[in-house]
Amino acid sequence: MLDYSLLAAIAAVVREGSFERAARALHLSPSAVSQRVKLLEERLGQILVLRGSPCRATEAGLSLCRHVEQVGMLEQDLIGALPALAADDSGRVTLRLAINADSLATWFLPAASAFAENESALLDLSLADQAHTAERLRSGEVLAAVTDLAEAVQGCRSLPLGAMRYAATASPAFVKRYFPGGVTAAALSLAPSLRFNQQDRLQSRWVEQEFGQALTLPAHGLPSAQAFVDATIAGLGWGMKPSAAVGGALADGRLLLLLPQAPLMLPLYWQSTRQKLPMLERLTQAVLAAARDGLEPLG
Image (cartoon, rainbow, N blue to C red; front, side, top):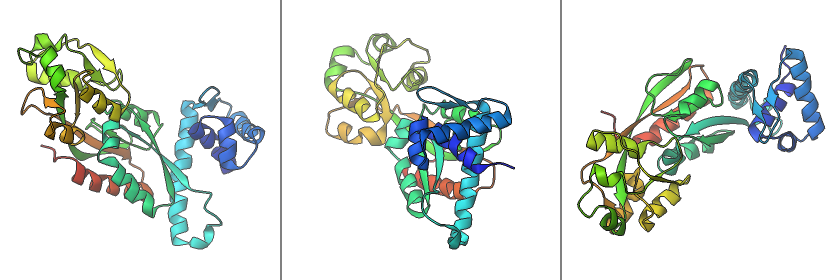
């Protein structure tokens, strides 16, 4: 039989990133948490937590964490049907999700708010490029993800959300300096671009879409959705941002479209475990509803 007090210690250490923070979350001493983790590792005969800053789960540890989350969701639904089972509010389950920064900054928060308003659950959102969020789902780090991958990850289902419209923009001064003869492949190979992180290929995808060739783009790295827009307005570089995020700056002239009528449409999908978990299904419905309001139809 599984000892859920031991499993809870593993899940807390991985979720919080350290034994000390896990101890505070569980109202235990750090040594008690450490002893529970060590006891479970001894019983299973393998390492479950890689000690470090932050602590990380091994593959086996992730499997146990995923099990704890799933059981927690089922327990919360059972408490909803039998309220007398709830002795206090300390047993809220935490759902780990992966999402791209632009979705988080635009359409996703209404879904999170609508879900949290009616559920005794917490959301733990991790940021990754939409092309890589599925990797976190595949590894077991998260239960669901917003991704640009249409094909379902093994053990998961994939539901279409819609398309996010991106615009290539720059400040008027930047356009005047770097594109005096128009936006060409040669000019783009010299003009500084902006990218969210090393995984961000939106600028390159747009160039390939419009010019039919891959270019090596000089780029500033800016790992902040809001700073990305502010830096574009300030003239640091050109970049791809959701039309909803730059609409005001385009309307008042602080930003210009590099090429009129040349958006990049990015299809997005919601992937989650296939297991029948009512709480996760309610989160899925909230996400689909927010996507209908915040994204454009696919196709």
